[in-house]
Length: 94
Image (tube, rainbow, N blue to C red):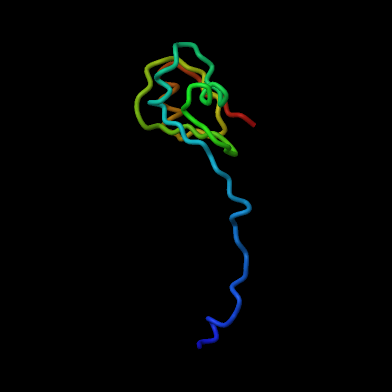
């Protein structure tokens, strides 16, 4: 049997440092009324996200026509542009 198969397989694994993000597209935010402050708790109440995550990221797929204030940990550049184009604002949580 070759030596590489006889040696134990050990080493560094980055899995302990992995962060998982909940993903929401701006087309999913269309269901909220104008002027709504969208937070992670509100998204959980509406059933858009569930489970445990380290953060929330908004992606730019779709189109948004409502003026919303969206609070999340990360935003893609297209999501930021789509929200601001609709007259809304972006709040980055820290």
